[in-house]
Length: 222
Ligand SMILES: [Zn+2]
Ligand SMILES: [Zn+2]
Image (cartoon, rainbow, N blue to C red; front, side, top):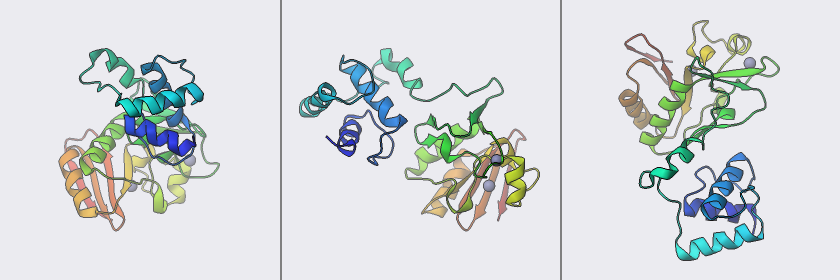
């Protein structure tokens, strides 16, 4: 089987929830391990002959991934789907440059890392902003790009100055993401619903969304 076929089967069965792209990465490895564990196979993340045979058999016999909500014993497994090794007590991920880990269902750290070159060694990402992003993504129900078109997640002070960002920008603390979408009007409505304490900036490309603890929402047009 090709990588693409394996990803498709894992996705169909509910083990693989990110983009089916034919490229073997951390997400494919983790999905394979979850499947192998569920099937009682050797858990090595390697989709070898036995795993491929089990995939075909699971598809044929409809052995889908157990819903964690209906299966309390798998509850603890679910949270380990997302990487928390870089999460510090301050509530922020401190992620070294070059590391790409899954932060939530639809967010990988390389989507929010500082986009500058040679400016910093780690990116700081607010866990609360990650959760806010995921809530927006779930409600919006479609792809949201962050760093396309010069957008930002975290910006270190050097990169922030380079792009002309405000010295008080929430990007400096990883508390804001730029959300690029097809349907800006719908995204804005979703942000208004989800963000109750933070920033909602409307731009031609989408919405700058941020979180803070100031008890109000700062709305602006960029
Ligand atoms: Zn930087
Ligand atoms: Zn922004």
